[in-house]
Amino acid sequence: MISAGFLETKTRKSSKYRTEKDENGKEVKIPILKEFKSLTEKGLEFGKNLISPKNQLETQPHYFEKRFSELLKKLENI
Image 1: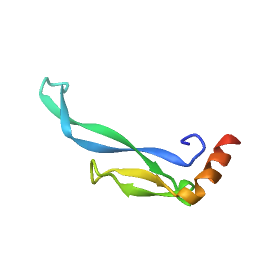
Image 2 (image 1 turned 90 degrees about the vertical axis):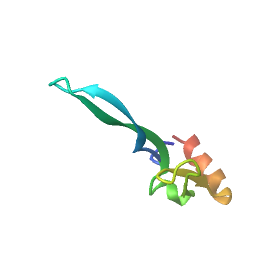
Image 3 (image 1 turned 135 degrees about the vertical axis):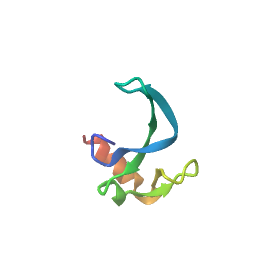
Image 4 (image 1 turned 90 degrees about the horizontal axis):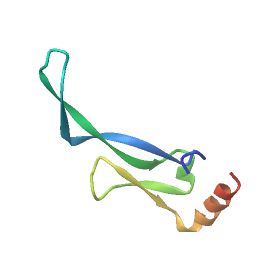
């Protein structure tokens, strides 16, 4: 679905950090990035992006039952 343009991967900063040393040897905190999926404009024809119950900063695709078979047909032709 990603290669067909219906879905995309987005990122957000995590609440966790990893520590690295800079060129001076000083420790620097770098936020870890989390990935999640989101419907594109093209994909919104077949569903909507809901706020994830796991994290308010993420979405999760929700597909319309009445349009799902049409989406499957489009994906089969790719």
